[in-house]
Length: 258
Image 1 (tube, helix red, strand yellow):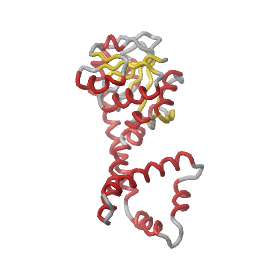
Image 2 (tube, one colour):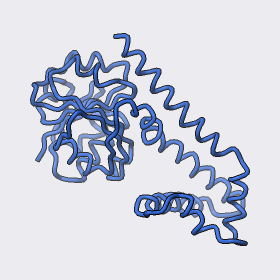
Image 3 (spheres, helix red, strand yellow):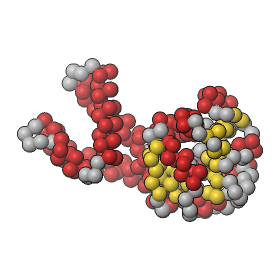
Image 4 (cartoon, one colour):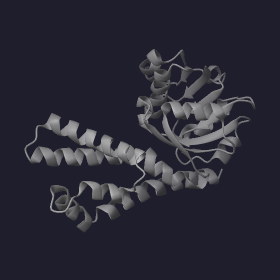
């Protein structure tokens, strides 16, 4: 059983904690100065604490705090060289974290689906860390990327769930406007995204081929696809992703000066 500490029990930190609790293979200590945040995750932890020193005694320490406070957290976090520190803060380069700790530093960008074991994560490390790899496997799927690609990963899988929620909501609203019951529309829209996503993950075909499999000539799907193909939705999505990636780069720039 791996001893894991999670420092910062906001949305992402609490999702990690709940996800790790589901596996039953990790002993988790949660640390936050906000006692209400600790109360929310207490059922899923072996221990909760407001003392960062108590959270330092773990094989793997996740730092899931906002970029603006990471320097203060690292200043109080004394880890030995044989520990692993996993940073989640958007835009914070590994070099900055490494200058504040003796521990091995791994940078990841996960998302909130970690709570359900369906996380998509990007990881950047010098060498594979077996403990971190096992944790990420337990929480969902992950890909290894170069750190220079982390800004776009932050936009794609880090911010991406919000973009998908928006699209699900838009399809739901359109179905309700066509007369479908709101609850039924929610279920059908969400499950359609879930099923389509799983098809992409498991299929050897690209998305264009999968579209062709659904959009038979003269059918209903092709009529809808013609609207999408004639629209600027692709450029809007590119702009959406680009804006999020650019913000990650801006955050990183603030740490390059330190």
